[in-house]
Image (cartoon, rainbow, N blue to C red; front, side):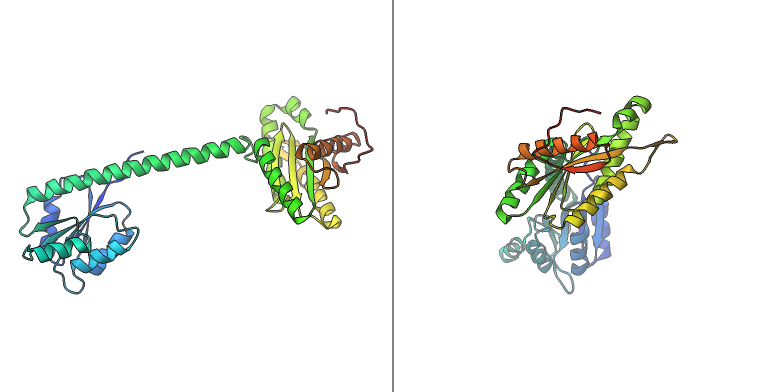
Length: 324
């Protein structure tokens, strides 16, 4: 990724001086921005995104260069910008000290020696490009790490939490339910008729179906519920603080109705259903694998009963292995 073009801010209340500086700097690959007052200089310094250097006249009506430099040094997002004072004031020790204490990095006396100015500017532009390149590399690495972290915890097809993320989130929800003495409902979901979609219409249709189902499930659950793709056509939902059985029953029916609506694919209608098995902490267990196992058995029970329905975990129910 190319680095942005650096900007140099020229601040002088005399137009002829700004023109002279622009002429000296015309061969540099920079964007020159002009300001004719201290107030205008401050506005530009705040708004410019790639400001590499400020050439600041000392003697200006109203707010002089020293005041401008002091204000810029007090602001976190401008205090790193180098300032070179351009001055016709006699360069005695008191003026030099005042300039440096205001935040200047150098002095250039008027009339300006073009070669001296160019040599100094070249140094600061080189430093700016090094800093910009380093910042860009830092941002690239942060972005790559964030992307890697996301991919490690999300399903590539549906962008839902994957099984790894599910287990981490599940542990957190169990700890919270234990501390607050509340219920955690675990829903194991399997799609009815999904195998036929893959067999009859191909895997592209299967992928479209999984993506659409993921989207539909996401629209029904609450913002703080956890939805994950456990693998294949199986999904898991964790619902905390679901105390009202009528609200929970309504939520289950909404899930079934939403997913059961036809899915359009290449002018064909895909019809699937949901088998949902439910286990509940602490009634049905206190460990993650135990709760998932109980929800899974209940889900197969729902499927054997005809599908497109939900079934609570029953410790007395024994089911043979069943696959659609």
